[in-house]
Each structure stands twice: as structure tokens, then as C-alpha cells.
Length: 120
Image (cartoon, rainbow, N blue to C red; front, side, top):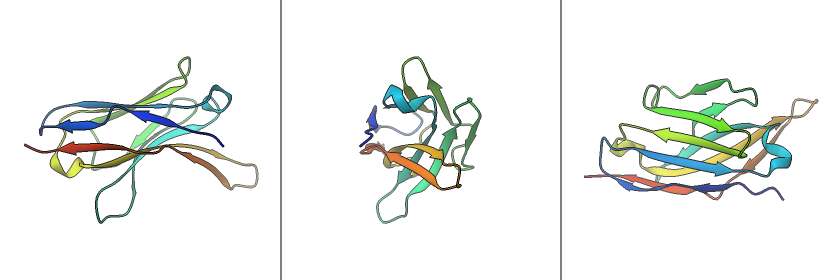
């Protein structure tokens, strides 16, 4: 079973910053796209950002211009730099590793989640 290990969550005030980290086994990291999802209380899990194995990024409109996803293949770690945090960013953030098989089916691995709380 592949395990992703997240860190970096916590409580901050509006406008402040946090950086989340996600470590993955070296055997898979360079082959998988890495993404971040979040789930607020009472809401469905939503996609936040993704970075391909080649470094191409994309992110949700709700975080565009504030969050930046990156990866360091030498450290087998993906990051989510979160700036200008808002109370509506409060959620459990999950790291995801995804690869598509030749038949088109995805292979997904998930982290355990890390809480991010934004309030004054």
C-alpha cells in the first residue's frame, strides 16, 4: 500500500500563509501527477490544484493567484504554498498521487489529510 505523508497544516489568521508538504515513495513520485484536494465540513471534497509529472500546473478558480503547487522530484515531495488565506479556505487538505493506466483507468493514492483553519 502506497502511503502519502502530509504536513504543514495549522491555524492562521486571514491574510496569512501556510505551506503544505506531501511526501511520496520514490518508486512512484516521478511517475505520478500530484494534486491537492480539500474538504470543508458538510461539503464534498473538491479539487484544488495539480502538477503533472512534467511540471505542468493547474488550479481551481477559487485559489487562482493565491495558491501555488510545486514539486521537488529530488526530495519526492509536492508542496502547496497558500497565500492570502481566507476563512473559506478552512478545510482538511488531502494530497493525491494519480497515474493513468494504458486502459485509461486512474490509479489513485491519498494522504491522511491535514487540517487548515483560517479565522481571526
